[in-house]
Length: 361
Ligand code: NAP
Image (cartoon, rainbow, N blue to C red):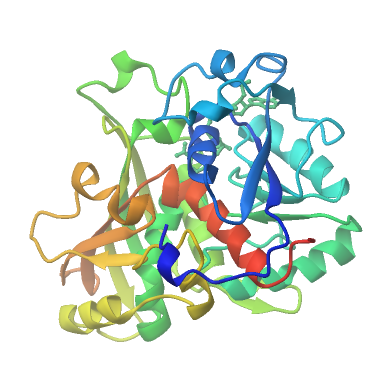
């Protein structure tokens, strides 16, 4: 947390928050990142009927990082808005449960910050990276008008799409990206728990992640798109994506070849990447890293083992910016999938909404 320069919101008391899907890979990352948060207080943990009624200690099967001692004896509740308190509901729900459950919480007046894919591409649902497209939060007016609910759903993207969009944003804003070829190497924690069987992944690469190539294309275009009266006009980028699951624990890496409206040199691209700091309103939020994008000069970086934890897991590292014989440029981007690609991104979006006065207090 970059606490020294943090935005100050007029706090009467901390905002109560819940985590839905608290027992999984992303849910546990939420619990860890919310511990000691200056604005938010964790008041409820919820998961499936399999876990409801157990303590958090009993219900978490695999452990994704150190869990704070004071949450281990909290009860795990069913994902029912009448049982779960909290103004904000951070959702780390499995895709199968997210669509209905998140809508039920929004109907009950809660602000849902979702990691699931269920609502991301709905035209009235903001898909936001705080530093890239905070203006897309304006879609909430359309959402409340069309759905008639007192709460809201705001989403963050697929874990690989967030890493890619952060690296592409400075280049798209400055030069206009038009074509993208991307091949990803995605960690096993990206599949949640139990995820991919160990005998399938150890010493192996699996060149298929269900629906991932489609999500990467549509979400990247929405992140980098333009806000209009009836939703987001997607960025006009043609995308060819290959997604691979690899035997890495944390951190997704994307090798990209990029074509622009006009030719861009590596030096011009590097200057744009190094200068970019993202939307000013996002920079001083408590969970914002000092730099959302780190440009690494070494020829063999980024690497997930060395770079996934940069900026507390909230920075994306970019390197190997060079010419491409087919399109214009090539580069590599890497970032932490459960922090920047999931829970950390959601918490940053919640901080952005709080700073803007969009969270009832
Ligand atoms: P996970 O480890 O499989 O955890 C899934 C969570 O959802 C668990 O808490 C599980 O509870 C709960 N759940 C499953 N079925 C449910 C139901 N019917 N009702 C209520 N809760 C239910 O998955 P994950 O990797 O944390 O991913 C969570 C979500 O975030 C997914 O939508 C995923 O696509 C998305 N996401 C994941 C990543 C990543 O890097 N892993 C990144 C970005 C987005 P039980 O323990 O009780 O079964």
